[in-house]
Length: 277
Image (cartoon, rainbow, N blue to C red):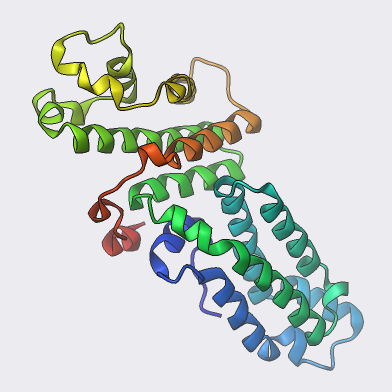
């Protein structure tokens, strides 16, 4: 199989296939090509060798890694957690060599997973199409970090995606103010203060205070607090639960229809950026 870097899957899904069926196509291709894989091709394997061959097969390992990463993305993007849980169950079946002892069983299990993926992948693609490449890259990196127990780095990356969206919203709605006040240099903490009714009381900032819905202001405060904690060594470390919560809050913020990026030139897939990633 032609393999992609699964660590960049958010960004890849956003730009690689406008039909939104990238993963189901990958599974379909695996069903078509698996007869040439050693696991199913070498009939002289004894049972133990065949089981080990299945577990160590690079194509199967890649497939499991790809679908597992997709399940993680689905967990953050889908409103219905049942979808990501069903993907998990499908992965567990594919991991078990006893349940894939023949090519017929493997193809059947793969086909069932493909049907499941087709059910939800269009919605996932549509949601990601409203993200910028930069946001996808930062969130990809946040997921990479949390999966490698780098919880501080994960938190910083997830919150930076929020910061990127805030800069876009201010610049889009009030470009003159954004330039005049040099807000392109503003940190997340500064932007949050601008949204605060008790801070930045000059008339020029009055319009900016209405950009963010009130319900998201506590979210921004919390995310910024944990970003500060993550970036400074004098404070206690974070655990998985906190880092996971921050990633969820980042997706919650970016997926709010009131905060979406409406100009397609900003969400157009940047091939150059992708190649450099």
